Each structure stands twice: as structure tokens, then as C-alpha cells.
Image (tube, rainbow, N blue to C red):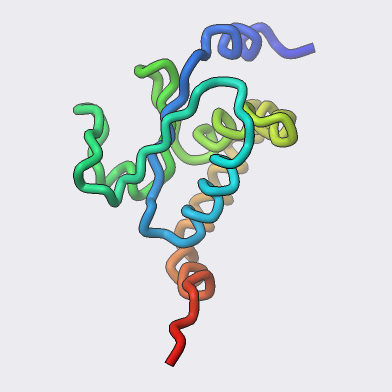
Length: 134
């Protein structure tokens, strides 16, 4: 059985906004994967590299590009591993992992791993770029 705070959060969630780096080939692949899945709530996907995309006033583009952010019900923000937990919990095959990531010690560990990933992301992006044909 889920703890009370998780059940309450699930009950209240009726929309999710995902702010992602559309300039990152790894991010694009992941977002495209999730966009193709059926989610429990409507999800708005906001590519931060689209300079015409309107951002909420309390979220600046540089901070949002530095770590993935999600906004629940138009007001509550999550970033890093907590953002992934909120996103993953909306998809059938990812739900259990998303719920596990919401447990504070697991979230803390996952956030440290995400921070490490962000440090090596530029090198990984080079591998993920499509090779140019001569």
C-alpha cells in the first residue's frame, strides 16, 4: 500500500508540464519515447530551445535547461530526479520506478546520479549525434 502522501499527490494530479532541452539528442530521444506512450494525465511538452515557447515567470530558461523540470497542476515544480519520478509515474510500465523514486532516500541517491550524468552529458551527446554523411 502506498504511503498517504503519495496517494494524496496522485489523487490531486490532473496535469503535468515537462520542460526539456530539445537541443540535446539524448533528451529528445527520451522525450519522443514518452510522447508515444499513453499517460495517466495530460502532459504538455515544452522544448526550452524554442525561444517562442512561453515560460512561466517563476522559471528561468537557464535553470530549466540545466536540469529537467516538471510542473504539476500549473504550480508545483519538481526538478532533477524528482521530476523524472513525477513523469515516469504517469506511464504504465514506468509507474513503479516512478513511485520508488519518490521515496526520499531513493530520490536523494537518484539525484546524485543525475548530477553525475549531467557532468558527462556533453560527451554522451557527441555519441548520440547522427553522423554527417560526406
